Length: 131
Image 1: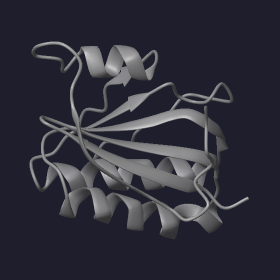
Image 2: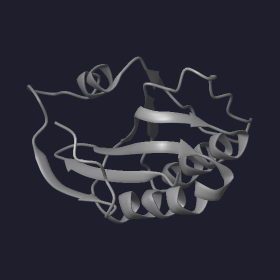
Image 3: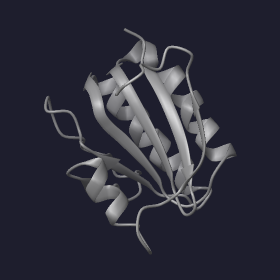
């Protein structure tokens, strides 16, 4: 299954959510989502992995690369709810990559005054409608 993504900007951060499985075949699509996030929003990017079914070593390497790419633009990457099938072990060239238990705690770590307001949102055409 190809991953689907949604990027939501908030006043002081962005949230990039993934659905599916991050395999080698999906790293290009993920890279495009990261480029989308770079072109829009500001502050840290929280990679919401709540609905990610799993990842391969190539998928984990793509996350390392995203962290490096964002860092060159002064935007740190943080992870929320890593998949249960393994932890991410960044290589020595990866900037610090904070991991939060879930999306709620990741957002709370950046909350200045209550819940952040959604400014804009974009997603792939097949982003699932969740209630």
